[in-house]
Length: 122
Image (cartoon, rainbow, N blue to C red; front, top):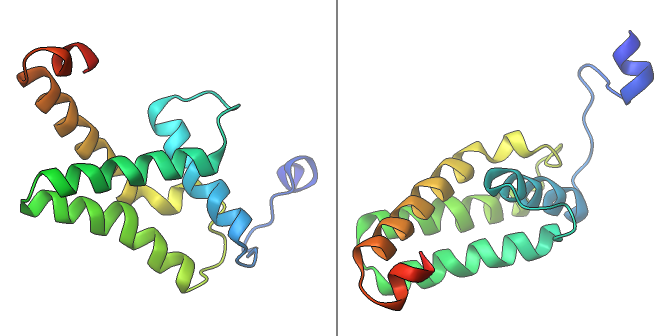
């Protein structure tokens, strides 16, 4: 009762799909996942993460790279195309978050294994 009056919670409530809610949920998940500051926009987080995954998948031709593209880019696009409700909560993107962490770990491992400037960047 108190939570519903203070924080706008509604048990069993459903918010309709909007593109802004989708960007807020998916971008918020990426920002929280990597500890990015709030002044970085959600759309920039989404664009950067999806761009890095596409570059990674283009350079590494293996099964995991295709899984990363499907889970990090394809699944959220499918969720937005289906116009699922309440996508403004980052918890609905846990599968994408898990795959994004695995991809980031693999990118760091490749960077540390490389020589020269790539190791310095990693």
